[in-house]
Length: 328
Image 1 (cartoon, rainbow, N blue to C red):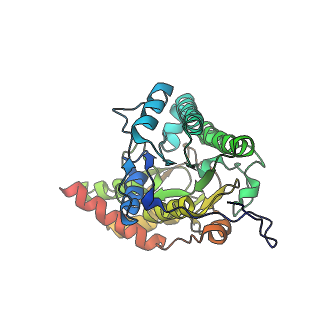
Image 2: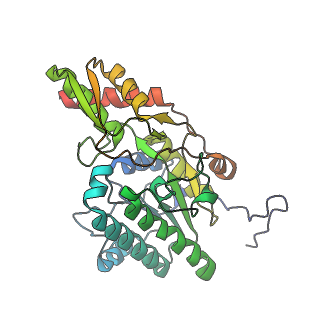
Image 3: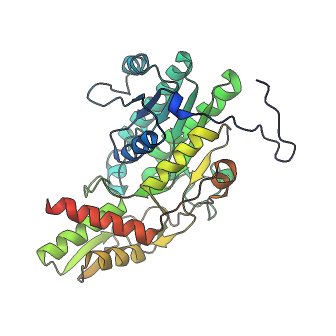
């Protein structure tokens, strides 16, 4: 098939993929985001989906990657697997976060190329953006500075995969795309206080403090920094829209385009959980990146993605899920 360039945009139109006819491998499919991606694939009629579980395949080992590719015979790979955590975990294990994320992604992309995989979808991270990137973060500013120090090893490891996919597209014609979701949250998130992210951590602290009658909870930082949050099922939709219909080298943000301070977020969660105690801010602990909000126009323009679930509704669903789980 000869693909022509659009005279208006200067880009080559993507050829849509019918995922229901493809063998799909989802790394990290047993995880938080992965569970929603698997449900979305099922809704699309995908019946040949392979999840390489950590107990059976160590994706930091080349031999295990080759075995997973042989076992799955994948046409499409959606690479969600990552070693992740909040500020504390990133600060405690920067070497591990860099090495395991980098080696897993780099080897997986190379082995996918050698195996003739039709499409590789790599999920990056908002942590790849420079610490002081102009707000809202445009994909064009991805290389305009160094990431925020506490999560730079993780962010740079992920960003290396973007370079690899662009290089492989140029040299080998490999169809690989790179997506940059903002902070995710929702039911089935990781509510561990050491390794979880900010929303599940605050929800757990509020619910437990209310249950125990605690007069206060302590949160890290000043509360003045801002973040943007994307409901996990919206993220899954965006990933599959891109998998089906996007085939270009440019990275693409996935988000809502709305920011909120951590202080305002904590107040919302306290209200939703019914916690009426004091919120104490431990300013000896790091805040992380000063602001975080994405420019989401590229996703809308190139594969029609716009988030549907607002923060208030998403938080309500997440709190209700956690409260039900913690009582069972």
